[in-house]
Image (cartoon, rainbow, N blue to C red; front, side, top):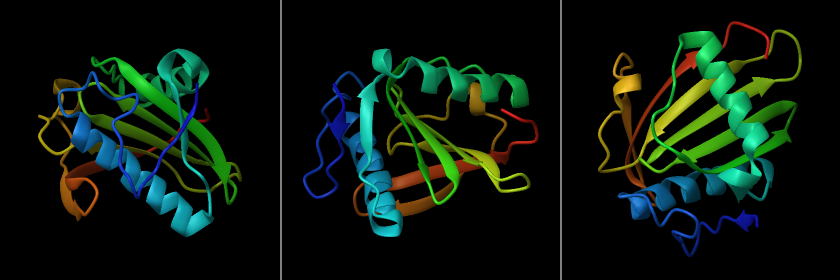
Length: 153
């Protein structure tokens, strides 16, 4: 069952198993607020079992581009198109959020972003990345990093 993420009344629905569920819910709400304000898009997530194609696409890009395999189980995911950009998000039990921004037009921006929830350690598979910090009223301190996608996916 899909869930519309509320960024006013932040909820841990779907994320309860995470040891940093409150921070991950804040991170998810932060993304929902961004897409509502910038694109008037309602951010809706599905349980991982219902979003297998989206998760497989994200994991395929990670494997093909950087030989990265995420150890933590996925809890939820979403995929949508806004302003000519295919977006995908996967939220993991560890508190990790991965997003893929994939411009549909040839030569457009394509990247993978990683965000770490407040209170989680950097996963071993992402230890090579440097993470910048940003403050969020919804999510506390978010640590983020990214890489540019070079291939076609």
